Length: 296
Image (cartoon, rainbow, N blue to C red):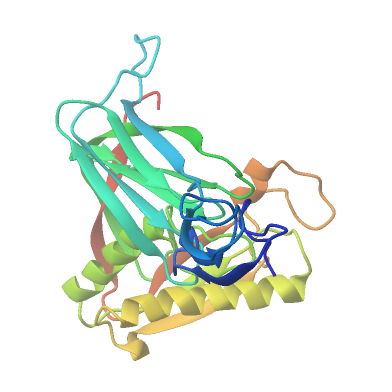
């Protein structure tokens, strides 16, 4: 149960309280003092409209280009598109997207007690993503988020041979979840396009965790994540029999951060990854990789 808005319940006769679906306004009948009380202050019932102040979270998102070696600060980047996604429920909800051709500031009105992802994109740049929540906000609040985009370099070609694991760098998951996040879709779409280009190719799609948690738990979690990525690709037209989803858990740690070894979160994150490798079809394929600007 939630308390009534302030001023609704009094010591007088307050009847027929109603609330609009948004929860912020409604009506009630009351004999409280008012302009229509002709005989006495509380003689007569009247209909009153009530409205509660709406709590807003005003987001200011600003976009910048990652500075070069000879620059002291990240300069503003104009012409970006910024998208806001509500991640509170199981299915992400695209709330709004704005493009600012002549500036680097973007304003959005959000709600309290929600989880959000903000993605900034511009042609020729790698997108940047910010995650945050508005849990516990009790009054209208202004939130500022900075997004920094890296300039892309022309891709370079690479020959990939059968059974050679290729890391998909942008596929991350929320803690203890297997849902595909919006910023992971780019890498999965790359893989879908690759399999369309090589229609006889069959792959193993594997998910790996770090060594935090029990071996059994991590293996189950990684299998859920691999299955989730496979489901995403099947929904975009790739036949299920062409993808073998495998959750390896913490079996293939890439650094020293095995069970019992104290490591930073950055070191643990290096082991949390999704990979694919060719297991049937062509003996080698050509892929294009993005090249980061020197010094970034």
